[in-house]
Length: 165
Image (cartoon, rainbow, N blue to C red; front, side, top):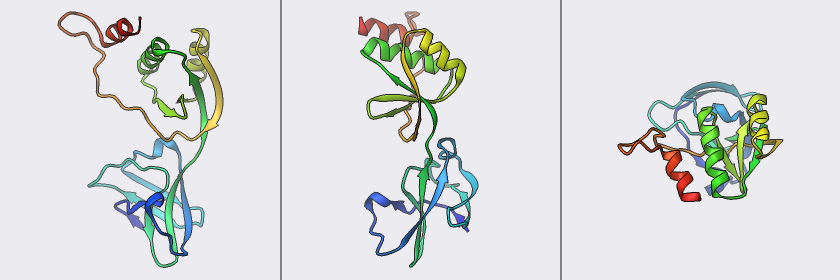
């Protein structure tokens, strides 16, 4: 079965007695434009999002008929859970994560990053409150801000740090 677009989200959908067949995706698969996977019921699906954003969210509906709805379930993964105490710590953490080009997620007041042992050790050594857990990475933090220096030769990080002190 070829899926070319999302049909909606379960949060705004009336199932009308239909069974939900879940398509399990890892967090990093949610932005792929082309993907082949099997649903829990064994249905082969080919996702080909060529004309719309490839960002797939938890509970997105990919297919429906009179008997079944195929919806997305993003699976939990091994991640780092980081708690910050103030704006300075938050700015510093975001800078460190950004320098590693690691994806950063937000959930229930925590920053989440897919687990990497070297980064875990680094953040722990720098004094951040870091733990390891199985969590769903559902809310990525996005930025279009360039960290490079401006005409006054001050970087975005320097400006943020000045605001927090």
